[in-house]
Amino acid sequence: MQNTIKDIKTMSWRCMLNAIKTPDSLIMSLVVPVILLLVFVNVFGGSMDIGGYNFVNFIIPGIMVNCLIQSSSSTGIGVNKDMTTGIVTRFRSMDISNVAFLAGHVLVAFIKGMATVAILIGVSFLVGFRPLADLPQWLFIIGLIMLFVMANTWLAVMLGVMMKSAESVGGFIAFYAVLVFLSPGMAPTENMPRALQIFAENQPMAPFITSIRSLVNGHAPQGDQVLATLLWWGGILILTFIATVYAYKKKLTV
Image 1: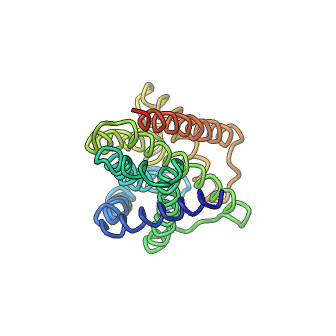
Image 2: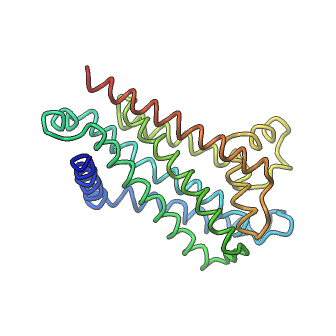
Image 3: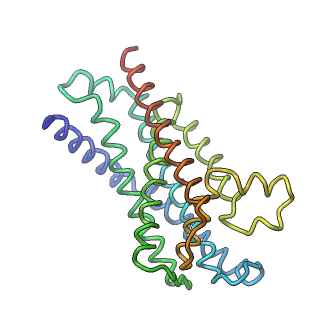
């Protein structure tokens, strides 16, 4: 057990060093959502009917989801490069726990995701973010974000293990990021065409975004939205974890 923990620490440190050596992807994963935030606030903020919400309070959950997806792209690509360039084969020849490789990537990605959220929220205060949540609501917000980050991380790691190239991983995550725009994250769904509205309100990101928005603005989220968030992202976390471990073990035996 102690050796496994030591191996995970070693792999986590390796992943952290790799992230530091290639800061461009880390910077882009934060810069793009910040630019998106500034564009929406300064270009669309005065022309969108969002009811009684402060516009930045309304838009920040959608921007945050986009930010986390962009951040996960580098994780998936990093895992894929390790899987396809032979480094995992080299690890197999060493006295290293098999679980350490995946755990190291996941741990660093989780820390990076939470740090990215903290930076984004800090920047959003400069453009008018004024949350109304109390302490229990903030704790609830943090818990939901942690669940989303962990599920999104395992999804990215799964893609990195399963797909044949880093380009495929990046392309899939870019396609996946489009779901943010087909959700309540960037605009109210009431003005969407009916078919698109039904999809936007019932895809996995919708209940998470809606719950975070309600909590940020000091409202109690609807119970069905919270339950849907837990079912969607708890289920995605469990399924991607199982699929990743299975695929990783299968590739080790090839």
